[in-house]
Image (tube, rainbow, N blue to C red; front, top):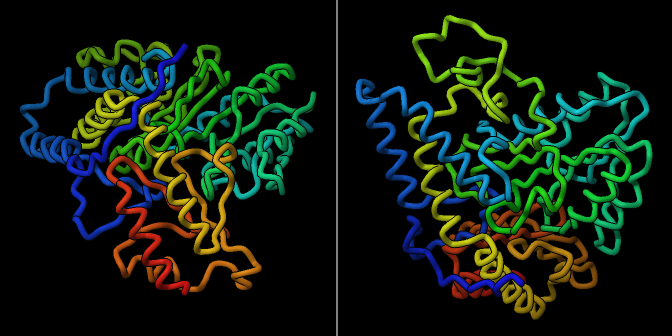
Length: 389
């Protein structure tokens, strides 16, 4: 039996956030940890003195990053590739899944573009067809996806939660249904990994990608790709010296080989050992593992639940807690009180008051992290009350 998660107290002192700023927008881009910022600056300093960079610096830090990331998803270091973006990972997955004319690729309505365009291209190339699951009126994305899975399904490319409002999908149930039809599951965990527990074995993912610069707290331009063991013999998007066997032996690089490095390393992007981004990413990976994802999830769920309850007094509503990821809150403006939907200029007016959220679709997206506390939620609601009347 898993132990109950611990609520983590506010960690604002670990981040460079001014006291007068209420930043509830981690789903947009996260602030860096102070330690990550220092590590990035140290990396830039080393690049200004390249004689201090040794051959081991191209290999040891990437391997540590693989190990730390693998721990978060229940994988091994051999299963992890280092990539510059979620779109790079999705393109890798799309290129390496077999598709045939008439087969289905399942996506969600209003899915993030990075997990759409590669599938459109593959559908055009192979004659497969895109099936887009409409936003369900009852909020049950899982049932809506399950209803589309049949013998014609080749793959489903899905998030763990919807990027607009945090609508949750039960990927374990969906993954099992896909396996029964011999279909693949590609997970875009950009809006959940690091703050919502996810085990690639439980969901039976073929590939999983995540953007590093959101909930993983990494610098922009550093991301991760998981490839299941049965998908590790595929074709990478690019060829480079270090994703080949014996790439660590610089003296033998001109002894060309057709053999790739072990596991998912073949999918690594070039320049994976980025000397400023990678040290910063390592700091965040260590910190997230130290906090514990289950503890982070419980702490953020408590924050959004409190905000959701208080927002009801302003006439706003949101998806029930069991239908959304705990770190996500989409505040909606019911037509009976707000005939025009989200009031024009609301997000901009909040930003002018140094309260930062995002407007996504018909929802005001509120996405806190451990640098937030109850005072931040109260400030958001106080400013909104003044604006909405």
